Image (tube, rainbow over all chains, first blue to last red; front, side, top):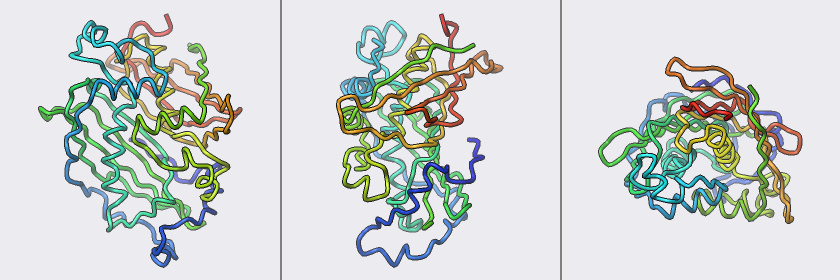
Length: 180
Length: 133
């Protein structure tokens, strides 16, 4: 993933004034320590298998107003060569979002989630997700940059099916706002 | 080539529906009290909802629900969603930028809300021959 942004976008700067911290952890965050780049390469145990339901895909498609028949009607999806309804392009977030919690909750990183802003997102697809897929996410820390008092952490989620074949790769760049 | 602009309304109800569908229950997307406490102007849309709406535009332009092979965005500005019937609106437009060695089409995408760009460096690579037809 290309990673050229080094500064927090101006429009987010006001968030630096936010002072919400988890109760009882104030001292932990009293001074900004840049995120240790030696965590790059750290990987996490695979997530439990996520069984993709037909109704979940329909619910997701409906929530984003996506009306293509292949998202809703198994016959329409079969006509395109899929076993069941297929998911819209950003559906892998259902797996990668949960998988990302392993990083956000990693006690070694001590990320203050109240300071996290979603910076970038990328998906690369081998194939669409199909109802009936059993998906597993494997999370790796790919990049850590500290600049302008903010930390930027890019995680990569490899999403595979029950046969172990790649379905999609998701990259999320999280911005951890400095104390400003 | 410019592709036809698409407009998507976003209301508070849409945010609640998306939270449930995606599993992202961060209160900044549904709780005004919490959102303002952390320094936001109010409840804001999930960045991933904006990306999902762009994905919807891309598949519609491509003419195929399974056309996207690569899709990336940078969230450059929050999308505030007022607590009223009409909410806000995200306007998505794109230009055909290039063709890859595999014959895929690269789209450069713009997403605007309230006159401001809410994404930067938004790109989608699509596998299709029906683009714009």
